Length: 384
Ligand SMILES: Cc1ncc(C[n+]2csc(CCOP(=O)(O)OP(=O)(O)O)c2C)c(N)n1
Ligand SMILES: [Mg+2]
Image (cartoon, rainbow, N blue to C red; front, side, top):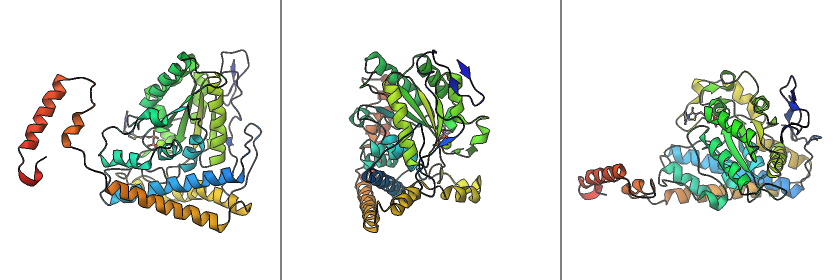
């Protein structure tokens, strides 16, 4: 095995996975320019009908609308916090639409677009951020794991899951695979590096999808790594590549190929989706304290939705009626999400103790009693 100057693993005859060409070395894979021009890539041919591209456009607009509504709800005191996906719609929709029904996705806390692609009702996400759900959803129902706040930890969960797929014999032509989402900052965590090692040595059917949005809260990428993140993969022994994370077509094509390779038993791939967090880290953050407005302006020109719109309009694939229809649908969805949020019943305070352990637990039982006594100390209106 040799590793070239760009960190790409080459030479066949090495353990499975290492002999796959990692794709272009230093370039960012792109199929749709910021101006909305379609470009071809020899390693990622993508043939989509106009209707399929229109569907992707619809996804992008709708997930942005869910996000906008959620931010407004938080500002109005209806949600405790919200982690915005603004700017990352293409990375999430492109990769999310590349998944098959049997593939399993492991998100962080920002993957509302992937949740949408997995068919999860967006109000389920809001329940969590409103604090009325103490869990979330059934991960098996949509093949979409629970949101994970502990940075990077889900990469180990996903790798374990992928090894389970292997042990179930579900790798092969009709196989299944796992995909795990994490951020640029997460790559500095031990968990992520351990997951890379396990996935590599066991050749696990997993795709590591890193949304490099340039910031880990207020920490810029250049303080996290001395090399482009996708190049890290070669050190662990599997292919890594960088895709334009604001290009929904490229994210779809690249993820499709990597997932198929994983399903067929060719092992892991690291995809670095090069994108930008257009909003605050969460609604508790003020990015004007640590980054320049000019940076934001530069990325605005690469907006993931505008380029698809430009393509659809230029090619005549979409007319004004289609675009207006999607906008109207988005407003409708925003309204439905808002109403559902306002109508969510408050949970019973003691419900927080449920489902912590499968059976009785002495410490938890004592805490429950103590809290119940505290609640009982109130009278009248404030009583539980
Ligand atoms: C183990 C751990 N350490 C620290 C934190 C606090 N924290 C929350 S988000 C975050 C930054 C994550 O940045 P990145 O991985 O780039 O993801 P992004 O939020 O940009 O999507 C940190 C340090 C945490 N949640 N978990
Ligand atoms: Mg980040």
